[in-house]
Length: 391
Ligand code: RFL
Ligand code: PHB
Image 1 (cartoon, helix red, strand yellow):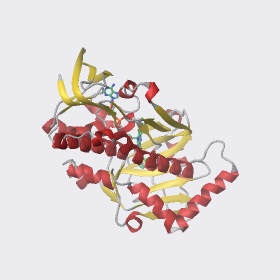
Image 2: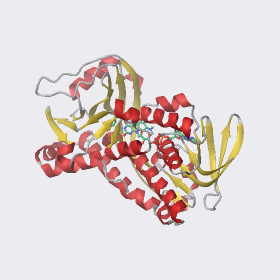
Image 3: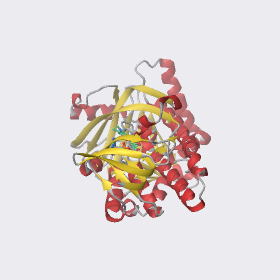
Image 4: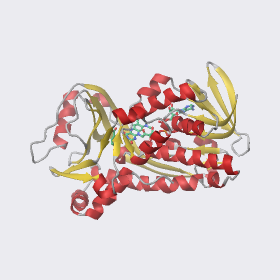
């Protein structure tokens, strides 16, 4: 099997890349180790930055998002029973975000790829990337019980944090920057209308809580829990009781309860792998970097990477110049480090570390008061949350 761009992984990064290349007249093959139902139902991110929304529309993948997605013009920060709304359009010259789940983005892109695009093979597991530093890189993979080779001009590793592509970059050329956190998020889906029409990020002495949503009738909520917590160790009523405590206000706001349909724990990590390119192998999305979910940046960063790659390869095709491909890693990393910084800031602003001192508690509250009381600090948050420009 032969193609111009071999794409490993059919998460948002791999699927969107295949679509962008198809639109640019460049052929690709996508290899995905899991089956279609698994990829379409994996619960993850929920917030699309303005730039991501624009990219999906331009790629012809925005119709259902525009019908069913919920435009959000702000978020609420809650602390000390107080509520502060961050007004995105007022602070950023009109920008907003979209609540449209990653599962739905993936469903839309898969349907388009199968209808119009190049091959997308499910249950096709990449085993190794070979000859990455030559002009004929290859992906060895297993599909339908047989081992095969995909011969490529370029390989893009969109295979997430646990994928194989990153391992093909020699360790001596690599630098890894990493931080883990002593807590995770217990996430639930519940069949109940969201108790607020915008997301609520709550800082509480008992730990962080987040109110989000998937639709006008489905809520998505998260609780900070100790690292390594088993989701099943939390009973449903216990979860609602804890959410209620952490979202407490000094007004008559109420948290509505409903049947919990899914429960899981997500670990928290910050991670950057440099460089993101070795010869003709490029890394994109979670394969190269992880942010803690507090800033809602993971999916949006993946989109930024593949837009950068697609532009660079199109430039190479049209102008015969590898200038943008050569700059890929550097271009992506500038944006990635801004998202790492913001995600870290949001995480440390809102979570309570197990060894937090009263001094650190007061500092968190002072930081929150500063955001609530200063247009400059409020704007800083709004700009980062709605997203930095692509490239
Ligand atoms: P993905 O979505 O992980 O997709 C990678 C794909 O590669 C496949 N794969 C392979 N395929 C072939 N051969 C192999 N050897 C392969 N190894 C792996 C996998 O099956 C998968 O389909 O990466 P991508 O495309 O870079 O997209 C990134 C986003 O998914 C990610 O940044 C966000 O979802 C991060 N994230 C969250 N972000 C938020 O903004 N809000 C959230 O609430 C949120 N929750 C999460 C998350 C990430 C999680 N991970 C990675 C464990 C919850 C979880 C559990
Ligand atoms: C979500 O809806 O899953 C979500 C929203 C905002 C975040 C993280 C996750 O910061």
